[in-house]
Length: 212
Image (cartoon, one colour):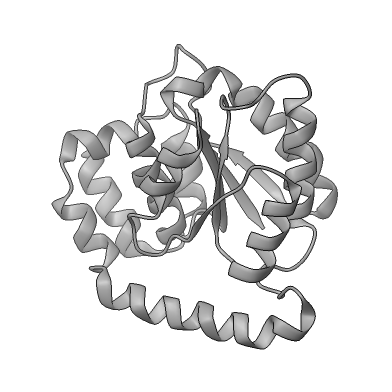
């Protein structure tokens, strides 16, 4: 699985900690981590609203299979990501949250709180959380006897969301260009995205927006 990290401006100094915890948890499981920043206070700033744009481009463009993000409380980034088609983002604060979201909801993104109630041992807490998040196949079901009904509910949600959202490339076309360019302005975005993207329509629209 290709797992992308997306950080916003208020917690950008914690990007290295987030990356370290994620790598230690998932690389032994065979997953690959791509860090899209922000990498620190000297990086091009993106707001928690723009994390949703960036994450949705990665997921809908096929450049990532899963996105890990966060903000001070974790709530703003979660709301931003869930504003887009093709993204199911959970709010995860601990290993139990992570395991139940992964197994019951089978989403493709999580937002974690990076300032609220975070202190000594935060990096360990994140590592344990990521271990539970990615230790089993997403959407496997919990408890086991509920797996079929949970899968049915998830598929129903997909149908509802498909009705409620416009096609992603069309949506990108109508977003404010400056807002979108800012979200895609990370130092390594073009290098990582175009090397991994599999959806040609989304990749073409991104090139158009960035005037490449």
